[in-house]
Length: 328
Image (cartoon, rainbow, N blue to C red; front, side):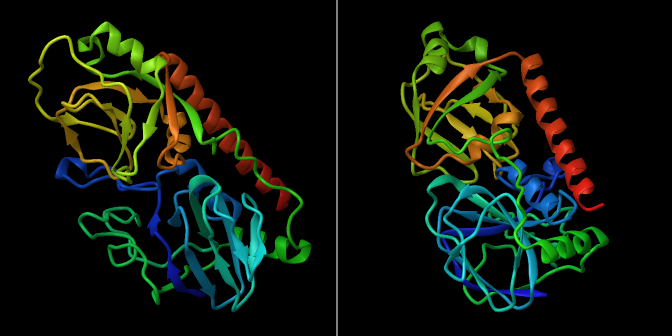
């Protein structure tokens, strides 16, 4: 089975759960910006949840399938169509040989995820299929997809076959996974954060502004980081910091006082003061905000963040169990 890229869109890459364990060598984690959508897309077609998927950003991607193929689309609503007919997200769908899958402009969210039954047949580099764009490794030839690229799919597993057969017999399923328990696609979002390593070094007014004033996501944002426009934040006194490890969701404050939230393609270390850390449970929602979206922050404790993460992982397990029961 294989696919032809008729139009690559603004930015389409292959991403999975990320390239962990290599930051000590200076290699970025990368991976899906919205890992909840990526994992659920894989589960819907019977893949391992960590399998590589297509990450489609904002608009324009158009793909033609050379065989009947089982797919699932999750994440933002990019007005997806198959041969001009709208297709529902967050459920498994069979796309017929020769059909064209088109992603229009995002009307909700910023990124859609396309999982293919059997996965995408590309090399695993340092334990991951994710595209590391800056270094040009992983993914499809280390780069974003381009027009006329041709990609092959992996062999179907028993789980893929079961889902394929079930959907083939029933047609479009009358069930779907709701996205609301995992991500928000709203244009204005409240993102929950914890205190960062240097939180106590910021003045009281800045701490108050962080959780009371809205910030706007600027067009300079990308997979590396979200740059925010809003009230500047300042330290009580100048700090001399050594660069240290940073992670997905770290909120750094550069000298101009405007927050930068580090995302999937973040650098491995940073030297700016860290005022906050976005909780893991909210990273999917954060990854779905578009330029000019408004963000507000809510400060919570580490224990609360843990509970939110555990609750979402329990819901993922419920999806796995539910799909298994449907296939029996």
